[in-house]
Length: 290
Length: 290
Image (cartoon, rainbow over all chains, first blue to last red; front, side):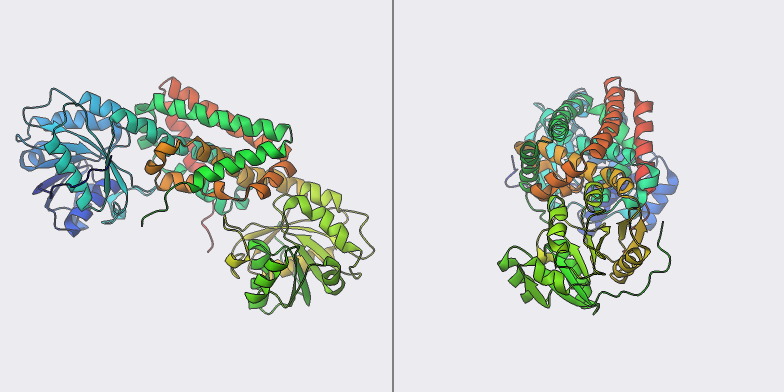
């Protein structure tokens, strides 16, 4: 559901853990809109210096405890397989009332793991801003990356209305349209809309023989663009959402098998039906807002 | 191979049969560059009037014989399943020395069917400009559609050097880079670079459940963009290149199966290998020239 009337943002200090494309873009968006002070946290001092020199942060630190003590919200923009451990490490230093969220592409295992046993008054609530790029690194940060995009919040039973409202207001102030879903519903949906397309784009890219590269035109390039994504990030995403992804892959294989049969049998009317259905499904997508 | 030194274009009158996006763009390109007189041929008088009103043609006719009598080159831009019959109909009215070509996405069956028994002095030589769009209709014609793109010529044993040189010069004058391949090699390559990506994009589009559409972001949109193509055109293309397409689909299924196994077995290192290979294959594509 769409959160109707978010309260105004009230996170004076925003810690961003992992300053890559997404973390950097959140930082850029916050600073451009004067929404608060940005504390960039990372393991790589060189990347933090780069973020500072690009004007993406007010402060940087490699010690998450330093940022956690000052932050009103911590946003984990690390690979999905490092989020839960990172949150647990930060919690010990957080003040009561701190909200912790993330920007990971899978939510089930992260939200289940962090739904309880956090410190008193410290709450984790998952976020997933549906924005990104095959580009990596905060040098590609874009203060408008979230404008017009959906951001999914994934509350669980223990989530407080206050945390939901504060995070909804935060993402809304970055230009996003906020939806709420359960972590499980999110993961099933994202398997279809993101993880399966990534897997399939990778299979098409891998199928291309080197000697045919010269004949790859716009259609091939578009269909396989996301296959350029970071293999480590996507390995973690595929494994964190393995069951839903396998389910989606099974659906795709069923459709692919129907195409194979229609072609083998030179069944033009069946083939046309399959293509008409695909086109209708593609064209039913809402036009992009931006 | 790249045709090294094409002779200057010498087709004073150019008949374009089928004035959709490709035919219209060839017409626009010819007129913008003052390369000759354009005769637009079609079955639909309304579309021909539109082409005329858009300034894409000097003359129009629904009678191919009228255009064939005047043309130095005829370019068939009709769906692939109508090219061979259209050429045979036109041949009877052509003057000796006329070159006939096409812009179809499959070449084997067309070129085999037209490699002999044409009229004395009239020669068919297949072309495939690798340009297009999911948009349809000459209202989207673009005089620069072929600039920087590859155009494949598919000569057979009986093809004359003169026809190859004249057509190479023609496409070059539209901005394309001309390559020569056998019709069979072309079809195998295009199965991988175009027909398989189209089929696979269609399967991914069809897999998306309506309730998840709202969560489809840029990655999904890019991966499935070509699934919006015309179902009739693509039914004809898939059937005209059925064997090569099935072969490519088999290769894709093998890669997909490897992904499935790696995910089922939670084998992170194998999954990463598959993703690294896909990224390398994608990134080995030449950057686009335009």
